[in-house]
Image (tube, rainbow, N blue to C red; front, side, top):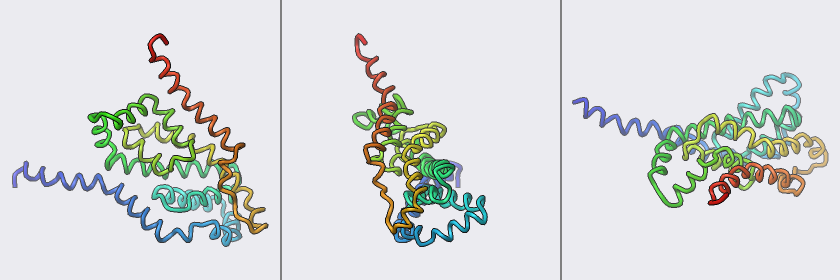
Length: 247
């Protein structure tokens, strides 16, 4: 077999190797959504709250480590239960350092998805988007015009699915450093809100109620978040204005 033939035969293998990380994430996510949807719930947390508190009190560091690893896996494979994990962080560790544990874990998990997408498809899609025109090119140009603002907005706006906000930056060629920074600081406001709710779960359990996860859409909560969105979008508006003739 000649060297040329061997190189050609290696191409499909290299292509398959690139797709494996993302394919693995998607497969585990699908299996997790099917098999774990009835376990990663508020009721499971309520039923096991005393055991979790006892474990935390007996070995705080081991509990923190186990919690963060579980949270990373949930986010990294887009398993159901991310909101419950955030509540658990607040319930076990309080608003602080619970919010910090939640944000760090979510950022690490999101970075795993980002790297899997970037390694498998991101660089090739980014190149194709550069070569294409129309709406696709405009989307990428818009993000590249002010990556930091757009990435922050995707994290701050509750309407943008977390999984989507992990994939889009990989597909438009965002750097790893910028992805990590905007993810961590972008998810902090919403993460603090849900961690705060989790910190008050003791009273919720005592009443036999369930937490109101829609609290983030309350005016007193959503207002400041939208203000942060406006602040993040301000550099984009300023740049657009400066490009206008006579500005």
